[in-house]
Image 1 (tube, rainbow, N blue to C red):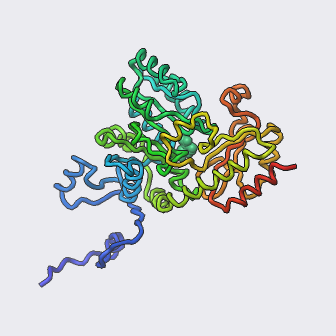
Image 2 (spheres, helix red, strand yellow):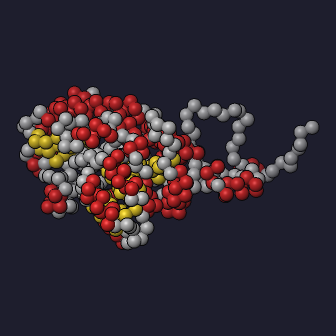
Image 3 (spheres, protein in one colour):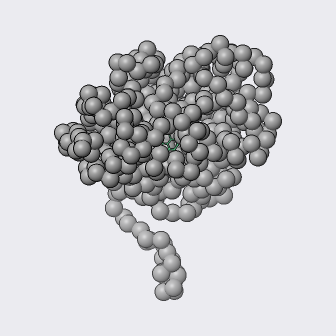
Length: 402
Ligand SMILES: *Cc1c(COP(=O)(O)O)cnc(C)c1O
């Protein structure tokens, strides 16, 4: 005879979690919208507090939907190799970047980086980290002799931080050569891989210790969710130092954002193929246009670092920038005339996004500093979308013309 249990009150019935007696094999990933997880027994609880990576305790620590996205991204970043990596998701790209910097460098340490970085990364280093007594040194990272001298002379350098291709000039840095020198001096290397996505570039397979993304961009692709991710080969380091930034600073992702990310990841290859194909055609159109003086694009045969590109990139991405002969006035005119290209300061979405730093993101940066970084009055950044390419070209053509 089945064990009879005392019937609970109506209120107790109300607060019970819902149940089903059917076998659940969901085709798509469920959104685990739960803050915490129940323990089967004290032994079970003890085992999880001993090693939380065995299961789930609390969703700031980990969540099944978050894990599903992490496992997939780690596999993407090591695809084509036998290497095993661990990914840690964060609330945004900046949270992921901050976690890498803070897990590698402590007060008194130095981070070596390139002269030009994504604006907020620059601000994080120059303002926040300096306040915490973490120093920033810069040089041309492709000058391996200079990098070697700096590493030789400063034993406090714990991390080399690379952004390649760089925003917005598409400058390329040699991940393999820089990582090789760093290794000699016991220094870690992190690469911001946002502009490439693991479809175009896999820094871990080139010798870097960490690949970092703003998942807000190509990894999501739909422009509906923010996210960041760090992928690393040193599993114990990822499980401890890196995870601590999630647990202690509360920089965790959540089930809904991770679910959005999972939906985006499914079409990454298809999207990237089209982004790359369209960008190649748009770059060719711009190069031949009489109002354009220069195009910065990784697929350009004239790119100053074309040999490094050949060595480290699998494809050329959908990102490019170009310079207008007519300067600021021409930039403003183009911005106000385009219709297919959207004036948005993000990138990596399905639609084409256009940005004019001199009249938009960089209006508050003193002109001489902006110019020194190569961000001239006529520079325009384009994140080429997956539209029918002729529509993008026609739109730019009418925007550039009289
Ligand atoms: C957008 C971006 C970031 C910051 O990511 P968020 O998700 O906005 O925090 C960092 N690096 C690069 C290259 C980016 O494009």
